[in-house]
Image (cartoon, rainbow, N blue to C red):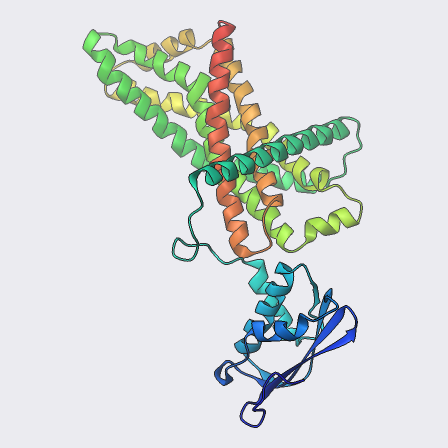
Amino acid sequence: MSRDAHTVERPWAVHVERTSPDVARVELTGAWRNADQVPDSSEVWHEIETDPPVRRVIFDASRVTEWDSGLVTFARRLLEEARTRGIDSDRAGLPDGVQRLLHLAEAVPQRQTARGSARAPWLARIGDWATTYWAQTLAGIAFLGEGVLALAALVRGRARFRVGDLLVVIQDCGPRALGIVSLISFLIGLILGFVGAVQLEQFGASIYVANLVAVAMTREIGCIMTAIVMAGRTGAAFAAQLGTMTTNQEIDALSTMGISPMEFLVLPRMLALILMMPLLTMYADLVGILGGAVVGMGMLGLGSVEYFQQTRAAVTLTDFFIGVSKSTVFGILVALVGCLRGMQSGRSAAAVGLAATSAVVTSIVLIIVIDGLFAVILNVLHL
């Protein structure tokens, strides 16, 4: 039965029939243009909702002569209503262009705004927040466990990844990062030296600027700033790369072929940062100390030999190894967070951008938190 009593005036028609007791077929004919006032999906559901209950809805658009966004809107509303009612739907009978547009519309969910959605009660918001972050914590712990298993497989010689991929990631994480690490570390050393000079000069202890810069860079600032730079530079790149692979279903293809994405994609990136982060941190320490020396010798008039002798006396092997050990932990953290956010990405361009942003923010927060834990543990151990 046609849903339009005036078929002469309107170029479209919709007809619903039961092909079996629990399957309803929606037959569309004519020209479906938005300007012709296409029917509302609720009108069709009045025919579909008859006894016995419908369990599946199929489409037949073979007699549609032309269409525009009006048909897409009608089909999407009908599909959303079916999903809400728990009814399966088969869109294979719709035109290919309509199916592609529906797929794009579902890939990027509608952004919720204050005007379009009511604000939930504060207790519900707290519950949603706690549930979300608890689920993310469990996912992070599980991903860390998978990373440990991948490292164990590497030790046993059973990890499956390409050495060429590892070398490419090492090049990107190491030599190509020297420029930004050099700039940041030198400026941090300058700032530490300048602040120390202003304060210590009041007490006639200008020489201790060398101690301040050297200990701060080797023990804390060098590894933290290098980790933050790598989180913004490399961690975001990892998230974007794996997020794009998720969008293109390449990670699903690896799993289908029996190749572990953790070993093939995550392990090379984690190994690259484990190898490069200590080296970058040592380089950052040296550049930062040189930045402090520029202030000490240029602003305070200290001799170069005097400044570096004071630096060598101030820095101990304990300080050096603490900074290097932190950098290794931070490297693992940046790699795992970047890869985790990339593999959790949705299947759209917007989702890839959000994954990269989330990777940077999460990495920086965890770096600061873990550094605080290091400070507490080292204080208890009197190191």
